Image 1 (spheres, rainbow, N blue to C red):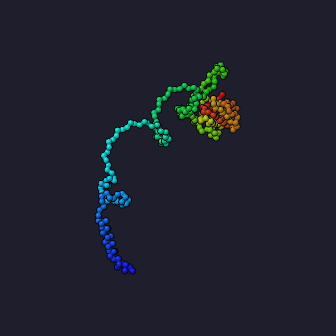
Image 2 (image 1 turned 135 degrees about the horizontal axis):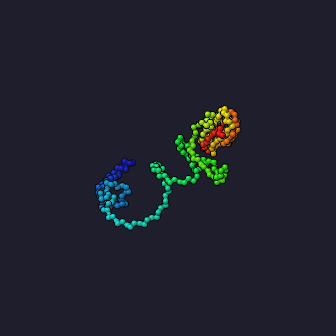
Image 3 (image 1 turned 120 degrees about the vertical axis):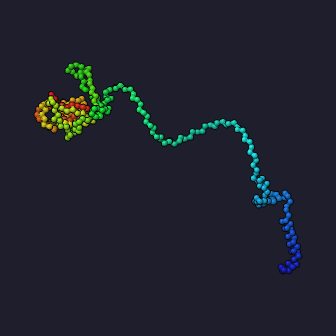
Length: 267
């Protein structure tokens, strides 16, 4: 059937083929008239840079014109309102200590309101450093044979330090004063209570004091007296002995620094 159809219409098919070939050649071989293609005939995104002229490309990018003249400065605006104060910053690190300045000249000497101001100050004696003491002595009355009325008081200023008989702070370490006898036959010793509250102990072994007095020369210290190991006097400055050989012990004490003379057989 197909072969019979082709044989009958062969001429018609050849004519159609020639016609189609001529039309396609004419369309591809002849340019379109000027200004005949517009935006409507161009498929979006189909044109390439090679399809455009140099002038068209320059027009797309734009040409930079000459720089204009700088305009005159306008008037200065008004100062704005002050802003809120910001938070304080962190504390900086402490700087290095400065060099100590020179010592100034000493001021004028002040008035001493009381000799008590001297008590307890450091001092320097010819022998050693110590503590200053202002010791008021017994009152001297204004009438002979009396110690009352408008009399006078004396004061002694001393620089006290530990005496040479230390340590004799306890009964076991008592100073043996048996041989402390002067040229006139008087038994005596001199010492200090230093520091305050420090006891001084003395002993006499197998000595007859002949009924004379044990006396403590001081205005601050007190003494306790022992005979053959027994306490026979306490908190006193004077004690009358009895004749006969005995072992004697004396404890001297004070709550404040003091110096004293201890006499074992004063008349």
